[in-house]
Amino acid sequence: MISIMVILPSFLSPVLKQSLVTSRSIICLKNLDNLGSITALYIDDYSQYFPPPGWDGSKPQREVRKHIDYGITWDDRLSDYDDRELSLASKQEIQLGTQNMDVNHSAYQIYVCPEDDIARTNNYLDDASAPRTYAINGNGTKYRGFLRETTETAIGSGGFSVRIDEIDDTQGTIYLAELPSKHTKMGTYTLPNIRIPRESMRYYPDGRTGLHGALKGSYLFTDGHALLLSMPDTVSSSHYFFNSGWKAGDKMWTRQYD
Image (cartoon, rainbow, N blue to C red; front, side, top):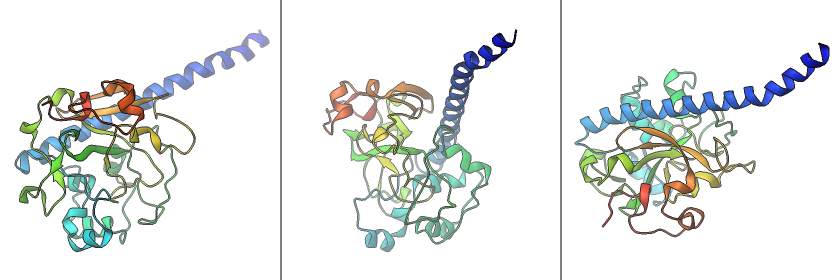
């Protein structure tokens, strides 16, 4: 009887561990569902435009500070709809790393996957700042992400965005994907967008290739539904996932197919 009781916990341990992983993945997908609902409210208020990601490294830091609205990140823009209700000044201050955030606010939890346990260290914001797991699929052209360069006043003084009616297949086009890194925090303009698909696996400090298992990630699509997928399955060929190359109109990462 004693030997059976000793063996039983060791037998159940992998099962329980897998159950916890599955539960955390479900919460992660629920987070993305919530972000999809919040984004829909933003789109209704901003002439059908998605939120731009914020500064992604394409402008010098001095230019970002000069044109401050350009640097407000997508997560701060959504604060008008997730109960944080940040003022414009607060969005600007957080983005520049000069204001502490109430990281215990429940709204911050939907921006981080429970599987994301990567310690954050960042020169822009203090260590108490909340992590951000998710990033926008966008690199400013129709073939690299679903966003494009624009100067529409509806989204501020620059950046890139797109109207939902400009997306050929909203059900099959990725909006948010996981980009966990020691640098990704709420309100900071470090890695707010994914520029190439393989970026969703390149920043893990411990050799992992996905938060939900090897090469597995959670994705929010532009129509608002979320899925857990094998990362290479999101492109037409694994070559385009593991390399920097892009194929015009490549599967789930682009908004147009011509």
